[in-house]
Length: 402
Ligand SMILES: [Zn+2]
Image (cartoon, rainbow, N blue to C red; front, side, top):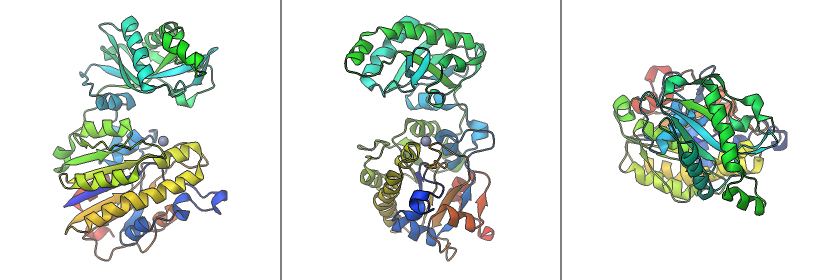
């Protein structure tokens, strides 16, 4: 039995005036998704437990078959896992953004999307000056890095993500709680070290914003996640251009399938993702394919790109993968976004998401409806526990429940 999960990140949306009061899913040409939906179970799934933020990490854990409430320890530990940093139980890691500070205001949470090469030099400078037996800095990609703190019991802090307060005075968002002063001091020292660094002087000449401060947030300890193979008895792999999702996959013991040309943006190579998914199915029991472009379109409020991303996904991933599955006697598939990213909101919303659950053995239990938010609600099939969909993908949809 082969199983596939397809996750169009943030695809679910609200009706838009510009689309004649329809959603991007309702207007996109997506014959493969619609055919699958008509012959499959269609319903809604609660991916984000109450009181948690609907990020791709929390909601992704649900889709992968885990309860975020019991295994999630923060974003940074997952990103550290993706960077192959192995944490001891008493160690804490924080996400360390390189940011642009101007006159006490957080001017850019990404330091103008500083390049990975420049960032590596800056993080090295921080490690040389601020690194110690307790603290170390680890370079990741672009503005996204990690600070590791050895004695986790020293710190118990609340932090604000810098993309949430761009344009504000950053002092209003200092970490709060036990040991907050340690993080604040590091941030202030980083400003002194980075301000006149040659990399930033060069950026200034090129008319780019300087990466002149760090911002530490999203801290946590290593999660204790039962390996997927042990929990569900089958092997798995993930295809995603997003570090966070690959980090989750690594924590689960999944194979990280890297696809050349997968960018996590509008220009991602959909066809290559589809091809790699089909190939990976030859050796793995389950492949989890994540597409970020739909979420990016939501964040940027770009209706045209959102519709186009759905059509690309349908043609180049859903089509080839289904064709391959249908050559097999036994297969199951589900399609579901991790969360809503409504164009109108430009951010994530915790609302039950529409899902398709298809299988070779459903026999006449098809919805007869195309894949849209409203159709999914109309069916009246709702799974309150987000992890339940993966459970059913592995073990089958109970006969009596539909
Ligand atoms: Zn997003």
